[in-house]
Length: 166
Image 1 (cartoon, rainbow, N blue to C red):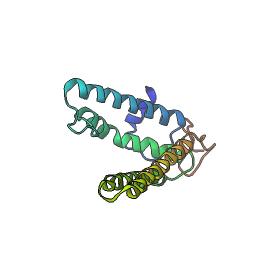
Image 2: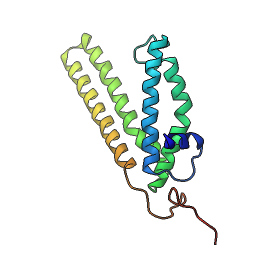
Image 3: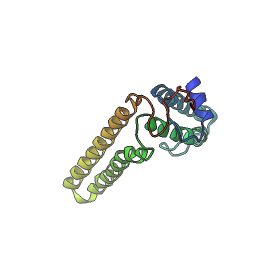
């Protein structure tokens, strides 16, 4: 819980470094907050009318934790010696995979009028999109479980190390 609170205190601090524990504990509590939000949405009747959309409480949790999540993610990338711009590169497989799954789904729906071949094309496109997104998720985990760069790097000293001028 202390790591989560630390990230909230460093709400929009995109400089410096965040060690593995800070990133992963924040991610755990972020996920748990989503679960609680989902339960509250169902209990309070504030869930969305659309089954795939977030309810009011879940949406407010997302809005409130979006910036701290990006902040700790970028600081974690800094800790491994990577620029914060890697966040865009790491999100690319999810975007590409999602687009392919949507177009594949549209092709499956279109197969109703055009025949089996179009449906098979759509299913194949959806599977390729899912594999790309899954590969991106595995890559994301790989990057974020990397150990900290020892010593100073271009983003500052390792977390917990106090640098004195001397």
